[in-house]
Length: 549
Image (cartoon, rainbow, N blue to C red; front, side):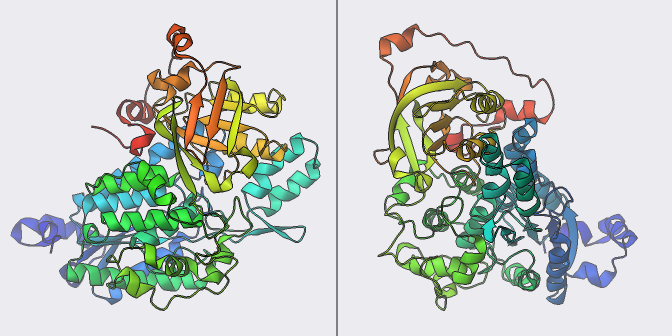
């Protein structure tokens, strides 16, 4: 066993003594030593319930001959950190999560580990650690939140509280009505109820083969989540005994399967950052254009929130991720999974119970998948848009630029009625390096929608968007403004042309004029701490915003 390095022989007498200080006995130490990463905290509704799941995982491990050791890592709530300086820490936290898990696993020479995780950066950071350490591992995602209810209709954090701000600012609802949305948008624990980043990444995890079937859509409050956690602990011990490592599961084919499922679901654009970053840990390079190539031949078959009406509850009832993969079966490769069976063996008995939620291939919502990659003079290295969340009237658009050098300035400009119908808002210096941290722009996009401008203006940024964003919102513009690139030289009143079907994003300013423009980069306010280190090491969004060292 790998753990023999910390427990076998005379030289490890002090090590065994330290284990015994915690109450472990000789018989415990003769078993495989298994890490159980519990991302529980009391700052995020997606994490507050994870103790019960962790206990179930540990019980499953122990029942099958392993000795579990629980430890934690950090987990940011993107919703709470949204719209202020705190969001600069969200994407960078992914690297801390990966490094912290790696550190504990390698320092104690564990034989395998399970991760119980939820929310936007915690799941991809955990998968990065799994790929990096490459020892038997399994993921248990914490489960979605139930939809909220307001005036007889389902709501969620986005359609309720966030977009409610814009509705209040425009006079559509009163302050009392906004308070009602605040009270009812989030009815309990779990990751936010739509196909936002957290739930998209849970579905991606299942599609890759690193969690048990149906795990992604079982809700946080459902006892089935506790049961599947126990089964996951038991299954992990099979992986340990058989020596099945993540690199046998997370292959090139598995990542392509996951992207196809993501595109069919109309998932978050943040997967264009996270999936390549996870693949990188396994020595696999996924080019940004792969998302576009697969999108052109993958239909969008699940009309999920934020663009559509359906929540994760609807998806679970309709057949979950296995149901989606059953419909997509002809497009998927047969890969190994943590079940011990192949992907197609796993879905052999899957079924679809509601063809309005999971549509057949001959009746898609859109002929292409959720994500499109745009290129042009404004984004030479690419930009990302959730095309299935864009109204047909805005798939092609020409407008005048309204330029802001920060998210805060943009929000103030929107609330001050500076934006006119047809404008294209440009928010820059919010990229991985320029932010630093590549903040999500959920606050400005939600205010725009709430004010009735969601399908009347476009927003372009070198930052990124929440999985809950909808409308003509183009992010990840690369290279970012902090590198002195075209987006850094845009001026108010410049014409910008976007054409999503043709994958174009152009700044309509002649070359002679562009040569005359000078770049005066703003001075970074970050002088010390983790963000300063991150700023120096982070790569482009087009490369997954990984750290280069």
